Image 1 (cartoon, rainbow, N blue to C red):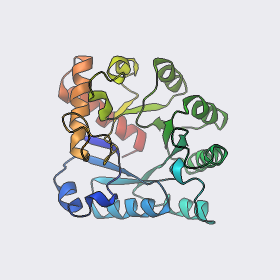
Image 2 (spheres, rainbow, N blue to C red):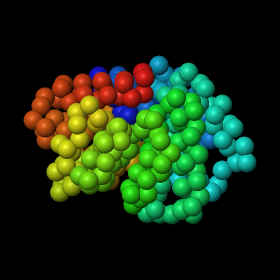
Image 3 (cartoon, helix red, strand yellow):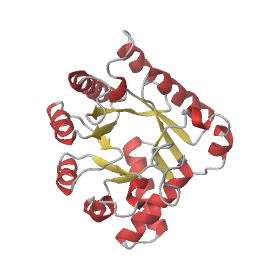
Image 4 (cartoon, rainbow, N blue to C red):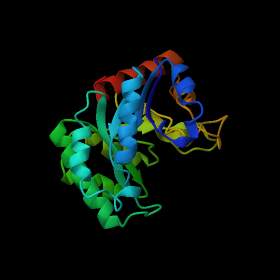
Length: 247
């Protein structure tokens, strides 16, 4: 079974065809919240469609723009039976849309929430891998996945050493992608596949709007790199997603 372990179907780009798009995908979808509004929408989608599960979190872009009661409301949302993780959250030092100190404070607090709730954490780390790894280690994060991974072999080894997972997007299909050279360093019991829709559409749709169905191209690329069958690659993702999210 296909599983898209990270997407954003709450995006307005899907408003005209969201229902048809979801109904045409027979696999499992993890729809990820980025603030209270999108976290609520993710839960609404998960309640409407049996094959969708939700996550609730705070993207680092919004870390300095939260409501005064954000964390109380977030904890309430996390109690919903269709919520399977906290996130996405983390550090984004590429765009720095929130001050770095604010991002770090928010990230630490969300790790504490995830540990308290017994939920895994979906980690966003862009141009901030060393800082991200330092924080998850200091805060003793119990379970996490580095989503949309774009790091190095050294980063892979450290993430695996800490017991976390790594999720790969359609970027692995791009010509001359560095990911295709290092993906084999990720243990088969620690890798997952995602689209990050509507972003990062794989080849041959690069530059266009992404959809959960395109996770198949990530599966195919992984199978090609590792010299296994598509079914075997699909099963690896499915098994790891089930274990990680408890679905």
